[in-house]
Length: 491
Image (cartoon, rainbow, N blue to C red; front, side, top):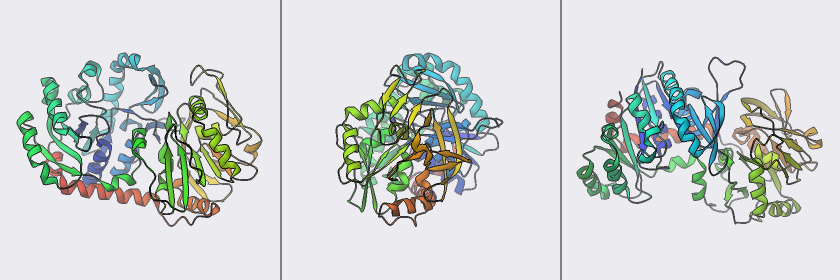
C-alpha cells in the first residue's frame, strides 16, 4: 500500500480541495507517483471517470474536485478516487453514488444509518487507489469536529483511524476565529482521533504572514501541534474549477467587458464550471445572478446551467421572475444557451411520470425551444467526443443526465455526439440547447461562438491555463509550507 497523508479542515470550505491539488502537483514534480482520494464528497459538480473492468458502462461519476486533483497528478481520473458522492436533490435528501454508479437516494437521517455499509466500498476503493502509487493525498469532508456524527463517520476520522492515515488539520484565517477553531478542534476530539493529527496549517492569509507569529505560538500552547506553514491567499486558485456551489455566493461581476454573460444561480445548480472557460476570456464578464435579483438587461448571452432537480429549479426560476427576464432578453435579440437541465428547461414541457425527481411530475417549460423532455430511469454517464453542427468544429466533454428530449427543434441539432444528433437550435439560431457539458472548453469552438456574438475570442488554451494555475499553486505551497515534512510524515 502506498504511503498516505490526509488533509482535514476545521470546517467546510477552508480550501482543502485546492491544497490537495497543489500538493499533488508538488509531489508529481518531485517524481512521485501520486494519487488523490476523497472517501465521501457532497457536490453537484460531477465529472465522468472510467469504471475499470466495466466495458458495458459509459463511465462513473466522481466529484469534480477529484477530477481536478487527478489532473494535478497527471493520471486519468478513477471512480475509486471518490467512492461515495452525494448529489443533493432537496434540502434534506440526496442521490447516493457509490464507486461511480447510482446506489439510491437517501434523506439525511437515513444516510447516517447507511454509512456503515458504505465504509466497505470506501476501504475497497482505498486499496485500489494505492496500487502502484508512491503517495496518496486524502481530502476530508466537512470537519472532524462534528463529533455528533463521529460514530458513523466515513469521511474524516472514521476513515483516518480505520486506514491509519496521519492527518494535517487546515484552518481558514479568512473567515476569522482560526485560533479558536484549531484549538477548539483539539479540545473536543476524543484522544483516539486527536493522536492522528500530526500538525496543522493556516490557509488564505492576506498580508504580512509574520503578523501571525504570535497566533502560531498561541495554537502551540493550546495544542502542542506543529505548524507546517501559513499559506497566503492563492490568486491562481480562481483559475481552477470550483468544487461546490458554496463559492457562488462570493462571485461578483468584475469589470465591465465587451460581452456580459448572465447565469441564474439555480437552487440545485450542477456543473457550473462549464462557465469557467468563458470567465477566462479577456473580453467576457460572467455574472452569476442570485435569487431575488433580475437578470441584467445588458447581458448579451444568458446561460441556463445544469441542474440536479430540473423541475424544482424550473419552478423556482419562475418564482424569481427569471422567465420574464428571459422573455425580455429574447425580445432584445439576446442569445440563450441551455446545458443539460438548462436545455430541458428551455423546452415547452418537462414530464417526470415516475416521480424520479420528486412529487411534482410535470412543469411547463420556458418555451424558447420547441421540444419536450420526459425523465427516464436510466442515467446517461459518459465522456464524449463530438462536433459542433453550426460551426463544424470538434468538441470534447461529457454527459451526466436523465431524460430524453424530442420535438421539431431537435431537427436542428447543436452537436453530433458519438455519431448521434444532440440538442436543438431555435429557428433564428439564437437559442441553443445541449446535453453536453464542457463544450466551452473546446478552444476553437469557443472562439467561433464568441465571434458569432460579435466578440473577439479564442487564442486561449484553457486546459493549458488550468495546468499553469496548478503549477503556480504548487510553487506557492513549496514556498510557504514545509512540504518535505508533510510528505515525510505520510505512512
